[in-house]
Length: 348
Image 1 (cartoon, one colour):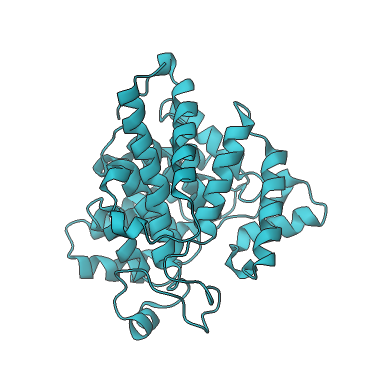
Image 2 (image 1 turned 30 degrees about the horizontal axis):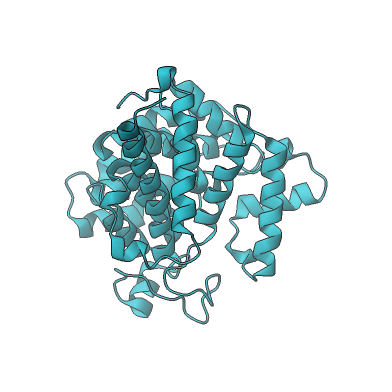
C-alpha cells in the first residue's frame, strides 16, 4: 500500500490535470471557432470567464465558466477506465459515448461534438463496427480527453502507456495521427503526475508520439512528434506577443491534430508551465481555443498540482462537481499505483 503522503502528492497532481483542463476548456468556451480578431472585437482580451454571445455558432446560451465536451468526455473516459479494470472495455466506452451523445442532443449542444467523434458515433448508430468507425478520425478529440489515461497509467514502460492510449482511441480516432497526438498528451500528463517538471514534459510527449504514430490506420499528414518539437523551438526565447503570432500564423489553431496539439505544447512553453496563463493564452488564439486550452492547462496542472491552481477561478467553474472530480483523481491514482511495481511510481 503506498504511503499516505505519496498518495496525496500524486492525487494533487492528478486533480491538477483534471481541473487545469477544465479551466482551459471553460475559458476558451466563448472564443472557440472565432478568429483572434473576432475575439478581440467581441470580448477584448479574455483573461477571465465570460459568457458566450447570443449568436455564437456553437456556444450560445452557455454561461461564463461553463465546461464543454472536452471536460465532459474526459470525465466519461475516466469512469470507463475505472470500470474496465486491466482490459479496456470497448463496448462500455461506445455505449457511454452514445449515451452522452443523446444527452448533449437533448441539451441542444450537439454542435459541440468534434467532427471525428460525431462521424464515428453516426457510423456506429448506423451499424458500423466500433473498430472500423474510427478509421478516419484524425482530429484532436482523442487528445482533448486523454488526460485520465495519463493519470491512471505509469509513464514507464512507455510502450504500455501508448498501447493503453491506442485502445481508447479505436472507436473514434483509430489513426496514426490521432493516436500519436493523444499519446503525446497522455505521456506529458503521466510525467507530471509522477512528479516531473513541465520543462521536461514535452520531451516525454515527443517520445510517446513517435510510438503512437505506429498505431492505428495510416493516413497522410505531418508527423506529430516532429511538429511538437518544431513548435516548441519556434517559440523558444520569443516574447509572448511574438510567440502567440507564430502559433497562430505558422503552427495553426484548428481542430486538426497537426495544428492544435503542437500549438498546445507551444502554449505550455510560452506560459512557463503556469496553468492559468496557459488557459488565458489559449483563449485568445482563435480557432479551437477550448481544446488547446484544455490540453495545455491540463498538462501544466499535472506538473504543478491542484494546490497551485487559482482557487477563485476554480470556484467559478460550472458543470463539474469538484468533490466528484477529486474522487475520480484518487481512484485513477490508485489504479496507477496498482499498475506500478510495489505500488511505487518513479518520479520522472
